[in-house]
Image (cartoon, rainbow, N blue to C red):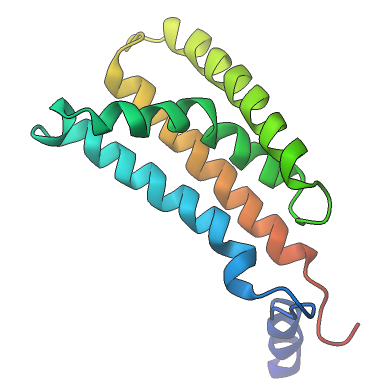
Length: 145
């Protein structure tokens, strides 16, 4: 039984290729998580939600982060897609995701208000970021191979 658990744990160990650091591989996903939480705080907390910073945080949150999380889930390795196409696809897919989420929210009892939009976009970003993290963990080669 212990041997099976050790084999399973070994398959989840990160074996980083030379030249790439662990921090660099996970910095984008960690940044998405912190940006999403930071943006939610600036929208929810009363003195902060009246500042102009809310607009500057909201624009990339709506137009970039959902798509980047989706593209990161679809292409977990940084070698799969270069940075410029990744950014372009992120913007396009963000617009598509926001439209789909908005259309779904119209038919709910909550409608298109700030709270449901914030909750659904944040939830989508967090779920897609979690999927991207799991796919990155699976894409790392094991220690024995």
